[in-house]
Length: 480
Image (cartoon, rainbow, N blue to C red; front, side, top):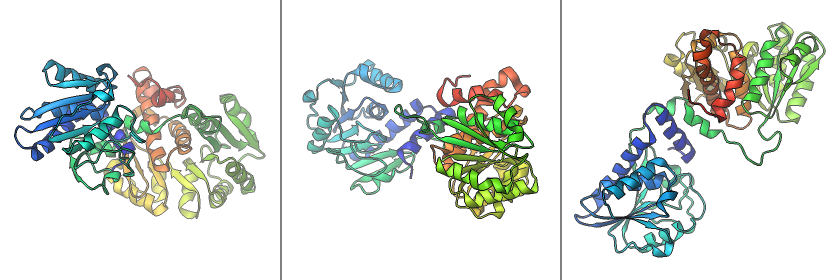
């Protein structure tokens, strides 16, 4: 089964793979028409009631495949209010071909006549709540028609995810849903047909621009609602924690704190005034600092990035183990900190981001092509009980049950530091998304940012170059 949110992601990913929504709409409408043809007698009358979105567009397409019947099309509203370009095109096609296609500008003017079959193409998946006019009157008219009712994707007024019916909702006899069953249809007292409309199976496997639909911003949000990220890193290295902290901000986090030894706090602060640097005494992370770091992170519900630039001193690795054993929140574990993960028991929710060498140290496969060994990454994630984002020319992401791949990126990303920006971006999404989704979206964003820069910088890419481009991928104009 697939939820309405996931279906929207898959639709958009299919378009990114070269199968546009217009093509899918043609297939959807044809599938609905085939169902009508299987139910209706020759010369039967068919009323197609369409809304102003893509669900209505499916109904408009269906009408063109029903020429053997007496078809009327009832558009709920003015043609100029149709909300999508492809639905407007299909309305225009009916007008040009002189179908009986009518605008219902006032719900009191809706007259379905006495149809043998009604196609309900008013409200699709993703539309919840009680219908408003003119859909409300149209739902009531459909239910009172006495006709056989074929619903497009989901009966209007029924929540595709929960099956909860609004007041009123269409009482359908048949539902033609697309690509996969919807959870809310399983308990309906009607026949449900799942139609294959040509969405590639890979649209669910690959991370693409459709996954960015998960990223939304509440217009009423205040500081902190989009997350606080707490980077614990540095000591031997200064650039890595700074890049991770800035990556978190560019990925949408409201605040980015960086806890580092005071010996390196000044240069890290100089990298970006937006970072809030919190130094502690010493040259490297040691176990005596762990309690304070855990308290800080948990008291503010911070998403932690643990590892960038920490180094491999014995006392530092011991501190990492202590932190993971005590911390109960969400963390991205990267770089040198990763080697500790298999040996600790933790109640924390982790996203582990190993490169290919680090993956081997975690217990994963030693291979060049991760995609060919995705099942082994999945087994590792299951063994760890955590999400694994295995980095390579093609990234493999798994939570032990679900596994996806990310192809976005360029050879120039082999430069040092791109993994640090990825860790920060992952933490930003981990603040607002489920761990597996965050781990999928982040490498696409990081890799797509590199792709947008490729014509200008090629193999001369710097990790810091990604910072200004990451927001363009997530929220801006991603045309290249």
